View (cartoon, rainbow, N blue to C red):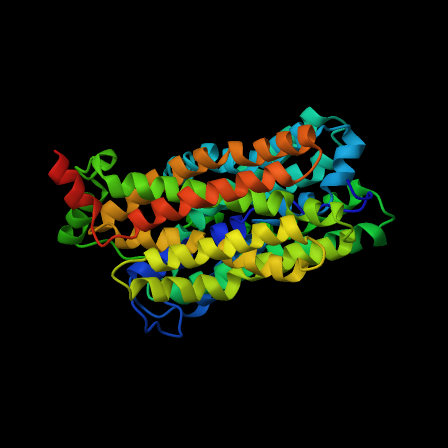
Length: 455
């Protein structure tokens, strides 16, 4: 291991990963031509107090999005110091990098139920509080178990907000879903990249202690709580008139569970596996890429910048890839192109990790944009709105579960082999089936038709 500086690891691609989540689905299922003014859910202009409330919602969305990844990327930047300070083995560190997808899979399921009971605004506000508390507690927990528990608390808040932020966008900005999703996505990517880039300098400025370098991000999360507090009395909904009887009946029909057996669709399974493998690649790359660079002699601060560069690649591509994908009858060529970038990046990490570090960071950042492509295909592979929701829930929940072992296995291989040859071979080995199932998932067909044919 290279010296005790920072390991800009555990960043989830999750930047592309959830940077692109709402962008991709929105691009797949909405049209262009949004207006430039805020509207209420009934379509009327927002004025006076309602305009001020809308501004608070926009501020809350931006600040919350900024806080959805620093808990992960700040830890990645200081993982080596945390490991030394708490006496973690490589295997335990691998477990730590597997905690984010586990929490996203487990706590994400509870978000809709909590939102129905308390309102999405209240749940997002509580999520920001959980992030703040987790980030403040974990550096001073004093043990590996306490550190993991506090990290899980912060990740729970992230998981809840991940799921409900698109709900808030859709409710408050029904005619500006695309533009507001773009704002949300860029804020998320910015928070991810900034945390990766400045955690090491901030730690040095605060005296070099990793505890302070991690705890400082709790302050940013605390600020994100403030815009939601005045909105709590509204239970997270914009004011709207009472629906007409036919509208209410239609809404009840839309809420009725669809008679779609998603597990009978081969495309649904292909998407779930593709989602899981791309998430695995993203968590491994983001969780361990910096350690590879540091072991090759790259400084900790430079490794942080390399991770930030990888994260930033998701910002423009999260807008470009979905738009290109929706114009193609088959998304297989995009799957192949992204996979080739990933294979080239892994080869570079093995052959010349320091010599071509910036090129490998760019290539792996491009490869990680399989996430917005996966979500775009979710929107394209279902014919109905209810089908999209069901397919999305199935693909993401199964996918996050699939992605859990990857980072842990890399940590075990790294510790027991003493080098990066086997872990990189694992990354390459997973990229091949990712490309194969991605091609299958990209075929022009719908899960409704497949499920009906299999009945």
